[in-house]
Length: 158
Image (cartoon, rainbow, N blue to C red):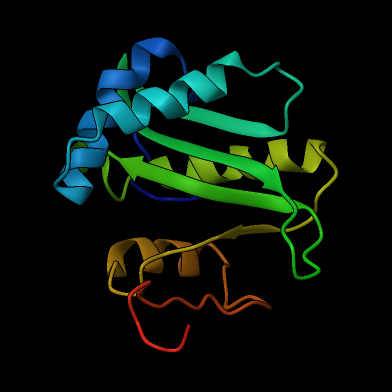
């Protein structure tokens, strides 16, 4: 790990059912919402898939405590996007921020994505989420070839 203050004893491993409560807690610290039902569905989906499925579910553990998590999968979308790794969830317990946890998770996720024969990794970040945006930028992420657009369903024009 390249960070000077790397968490001592940091170990990256596969997420397991026993990590559910910690993931819910860590996510709630960041989002201010306890989304247990959502995370239960995500865990069920990830843990029921065969090991060969193009998915990544990782936990970072420090001295027996879940310090962070990362979930992603290989996706190919419409609009001509070739298959690539997508990180759709990452979270770090505040006690372990700036200690290399997210970097270790992302590094392992990229190694696993490469095993699925993809050479790009993407994510989407709320533009006002400066800490997460800063992490991904510091990790080499830049604006990609697609622009995400949205609108309210109730807007005129349809």
